Each structure stands twice: as structure tokens, then as C-alpha cells.
Image (cartoon, rainbow, N blue to C red; front, side):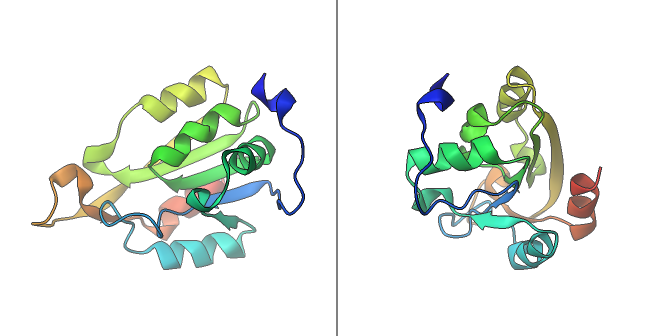
Length: 146
């Protein structure tokens, strides 16, 4: 229903393939190979989005126009509420940070949800669920081509 109140804004580039980056906001639970992931996804036609730099309305517009959204687990995934039915969603994160909240949102909204478990990198600075992690490109490739 909220989508009916959102009108297109000038200057908003809508795209069907979206990668959500956390690289500007996180000091923990980082994807250590994110530069490699970004390069790969750009080569596959994905646009990199930094939600923290956008208004809520722009975020809603982007999510409602997307056909495939992929990114590291984070608060951005609450925007899955605004996706159209059958939007493909892939969220990755460390083994100890796998919850069902975003999977549940996806189910309610009839989205096609998949997840990728990254390889955690131990750290003395953070508790295990907040360790940085590595996501193999081949796992991302498989997720976007299924």
C-alpha cells in the first residue's frame, strides 16, 4: 500500500540488479573481499547502492523497482518490505549471524530468498557473530545464476 504513495523522483537511477554495500558504515562483520565482489557484480550488470546515503523514499523506490537484490546482512534488508513479488534476494553473512528475520519478510512478501554463509575470520576485538568474513565469488556467481 505504501508503494502507491511513492512517486518517481528526479535523479533516482532505478535498476533491476542491485548490490547493497555496507562498506561505508561498518567496522565489524565486514566482507573482507567486498572489492572483489563489487567488481564481479558490476561485470554482471549490478548497480552498487549505499542505502545510508539515500532518503527513505529513494530507498523504497530502488527496492520496489529491483528484480534481484544481493548484499551482506544488515538493517538495509528491512527494505525488503517494499520489493515486488518474486524479487530475488540473496543475503550473505558469517555462520554465527544467520537469522530468519529477513527470510521471514521475504516469505511474507513472496520473494525468492537465498542465503550464502561466509567463512568467518577470527578476531579478538569482537564476539564471534561479529567477526569479519569472506564470501567466495563462486558462491555469489551460483546464487545470481540460479
